[in-house]
Image (cartoon, rainbow, N blue to C red; front, side, top):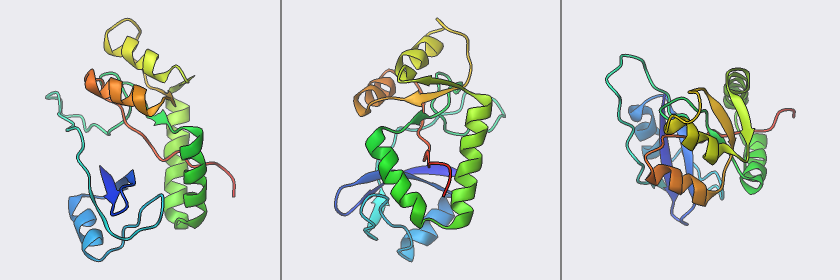
Length: 162
């Protein structure tokens, strides 16, 4: 799986998972990718920070972490509303897969709420035990974490239920 940051022709940015880069290219060529915010079909990849391996053979999934040990930051309330609207219109298989991802994160990681950025820093700088975490953070805090070199990611955190 590969995560791309995408941008529509109206300037909205969002992230989306693909099986591999060829899958993304094939879907882009056929205009099968729509903006998660407005539905615009003219979408292109936006710049992203590179994810560099640390020499281990372990496959690293992009997750919000301090040193790949934290889980994704949950979206803001506005983003949650947008994702809920998107979830109502997404294919059943995709929704089920995202719900499984959410269940795994909740089962294996600690929820730190709005303290995500602080806790990710503590883990990154060795002030707290390495462990998977997830929670919420602002765009500004997310940018500050990225500037500090703290690796994290965002997952589409769709609501449970119908």
